[in-house]
Amino acid sequence: MNIERIDQLLSRLFEQDRRATAKIISLVEDNIERAYIMRSILKQTGKQMVVGITGPPGAGKSSLVDALTKFYRSKEERVGIVAVDPSSPYSGGAILGDRIRMQTHGTDRDVFIRSMGTRGHLGGVTRSTADVLRILEAGGYHRLLLETVGVGQSELEIMRISDTVVVVLNPGTGDGIQAIKAGIMEIADIFVVNKSDLPGADRMRNDIEMMLNLSCDGKAWRPPVVLTSAVSGNGLESLYEKINTHQAYLLESGQRDRHRIERLRQETWRQWEDKALAAFESLWEATRETWEHAAQADPYEVARLLWEERFKGDKWDE
Image (cartoon, rainbow, N blue to C red):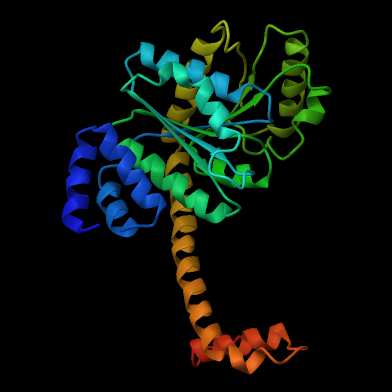
């Protein structure tokens, strides 16, 4: 696709054209003129914050996103949603179910839902997710929601894109303390006990509060615990207020700037990583005959030799 056509799509994107938004996202995901597109978009973004929503499967994350979207729309805010399935080897997987549950917004021109699958490449989807969220912001979406399907290591990396991380749990999953021991205490800015009309909701809230008493002593931000019901809408007003309070805290404390500097470092490294991999593959192909018959080749020595061949004068061990 030529640059003139891309410029036309970008102009339509900035005018809040949904079809142009979808096309630009597809181009970026397919790595077509990605750097050119994102450089053009970066000038128009950086003001809106991302709310990340994660939690174990079955906690009701998609239902909560759906209910929260309705709440935002009642306040005439445009909503952009990115749903990521880090575990699926296919482009749809469980996320297609998420989109079906969100079909109440299918005809709303002010809600944009994008599903993404990693196909086993976490680094790529992390980078693509950040870019898609920027595209949605450039397309005029005020509220940006990012949902993942679980709380494993891959989801934690994707959640680092978010400014406010909401961890969704629900009663009836056994020991509440056990349910929140999988490394999510460190990333949660807000805890939500969803399906709060079920027995055990108050106990789970108390369990989380007890864990917070142990882990948040002396910290500037203590994650609040909000009880919600995506079905009845109970607790959504409180969740809305807690999200706004946390984002105000990020601005006032300077945490938002520190988060974004760290994300810049990570995204810059991704660019280096791509370039380094391309350089390695080229050098490997050029020298492969040297190693392919060496059944006992020492990978440590091969790495050293390739490094010093590529970066002459830069010793591997220095």
